[in-house]
Image 1 (cartoon, helix red, strand yellow):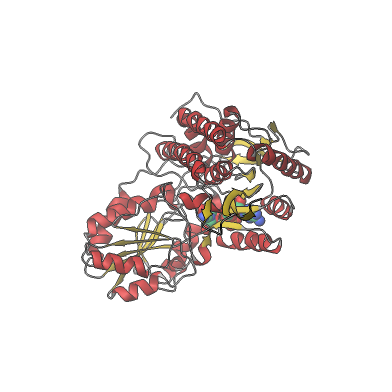
Image 2 (tube, rainbow, N blue to C red; image 1 turned 90 degrees about the vertical axis):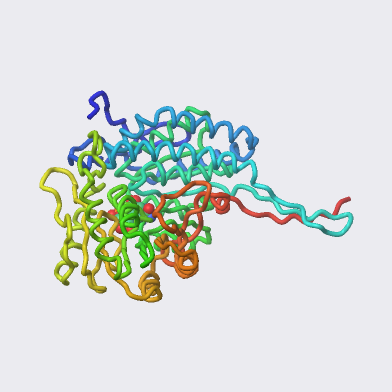
Length: 481
Ligand code: NAD
């Protein structure tokens, strides 16, 4: 464990200045591995939020008028700064969120790369000329939508904010982003890179506060032109409604309860190892985590044994320690949720094949947990666990497995394992989800879009589609004189 490290002093960043909240209010930041208080996060007043919006309005005028090549150069500079300090930012992240250092560092490097990708893609935000009558010019242009209000959670303290900041700034928008009050250090480190790279004052503003108060104020502010949220379905519905009432577009990256269908022709051991690696990454606190395992009865026992073995091989501990492969849950709410989901499943007859109880030590530690014989009415089969619990159930007919997979309101990610390309195609067509992987449970790649269907939200982050929400399309019909 490293000793020459101190958690950063957390401030908000408004109009190019680091600042505390106007009335000096703050909340504690905890290390989930020790439950120790590691810092204080300032909470914005309404006046602070108004200053941030005013700054974003002024910043938008400056940024949209900045040549795209110059914007790209500044954003690439910020990405390089972030890559160069990835080890230090990873330590901040692990201290406040819990994930192992290697996972945290990987996240920081990935988001730096995502920023480069968006920054370059902004140079290709082409409009078009449409054939029309002689003496006329019919064109379509894409322009930045304006100041964005963004709200991000605690599970990917770099990934979630960067997706919104990178898309907004690449498109030429300004942004007021509310980082998570539980993981504020990482987003401060990101913002520091942008500030040092020369992003003009007001273009990027960072606030923290009481979430409902901040979102209500920022969404209703007439200056806000787009609402971007990552978080739970209930909060997403609330914010999407508020945006709709103000006739503002929104993008919503919400929860999921991803099914994994393992077909009879799949290698059950390979499938189990790949699925378990994805299941327990970030202690299961990923919106695309595989979380309902539907396994053909002929390979069910082999799959389950390999899955339990993979779960048992994980080393749970403080993410700052060498060799640890799964950290604590990020907050006490998740720990309580895991205990309740396991108790409910067990009461209904499920078998606990490994894990099942919080670890007897300080910190929010819950071990990798595998449940079998889980009845369909157990809460874990319909509620997103957002934690390290894997319910495994057998199926006989693929159509039935697909029906179960699609039976929930969620539609974010879905996974299938099969050696048959025809079956793979059947799964791809059959799954109601926005993110599909066959024969693996891979994470997101920034070159391709991520996003959900049904209650998992709408809009896409990443890929060329990632800039769409941040750009407005103008049709221009011109009679030449
Ligand atoms: P929660 O529903 O209270 O909050 C989810 C996120 O929304 C948090 O970051 C929170 O600060 C924010 N939030 C809450 N109310 C808000 C409001 N009125 N305005 C703006 N932001 C608001 O739940 P939680 O305990 O923090 O997280 C648990 C659940 O959230 C999980 O079960 C999971 O479904 C979901 N979640 C999803 C993602 C994701 O990547 N899609 C990330 C984190 C949490």
